[in-house]
Length: 264
Figure 1 (tube, rainbow, N blue to C red):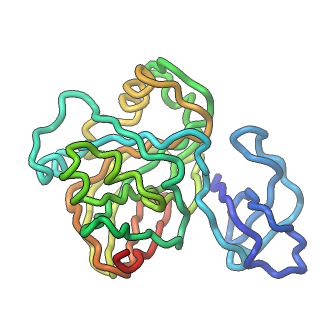
Figure 2 (figure 1 turned 180 degrees about the vertical axis):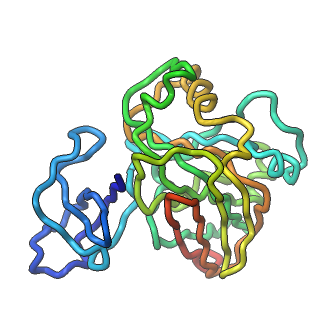
Figure 3 (figure 1 turned 90 degrees about the vertical axis):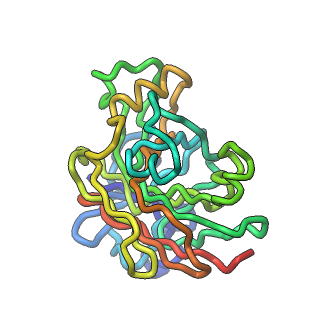
């Protein structure tokens, strides 16, 4: 099931969708509108159906709490960053204020001279959880979406830690939807900048798989419904020129496209 969060602002006024963001289930180019938030109130159809072409898709989840990220989870990326494969997962946080949706603009901070793309698989957590054993990791997953761990690389290197370089507003595009039936395996993941493929990997190349990631994180912190985990990026990271169009694609999940603004 593909669940979207959308704004009716671009829709035909005759659809009577109101002005607040809505949730819906996507099938065959249309959205079946549902009530409430599926993470909390379940899937309850309203009977309304909206053409997806007439609405604006938003980030499919707006984390109330946090985005937890895994660093250096692909061997080729660890190598290009000048380090060895870590002995255990490296975790860091992006604030929920960094989240934007499909086709939203990534804002280039005035204090940075280099903004990089990092295409990633994103996990959406469906229930409050702590100390989850690997064998039960799937029990706490609501679904999957696509993420871009945008990074001000010069600030990351300057600071020696990653919070500022990865925490700017707009630095966590997510979308276009949450796929609840997606099963990570050998799916291809690519990142394209202005039509040129820059990253080209497989989800099976992850050093730590999904169960290991969830077990490791929940040893440290409680995860809440709507929290997002970015699972790491393949090799091939690099800078985006001003006004670039960047697309992260994962087989079975679709494409997430955003544009970078001019240098701030």
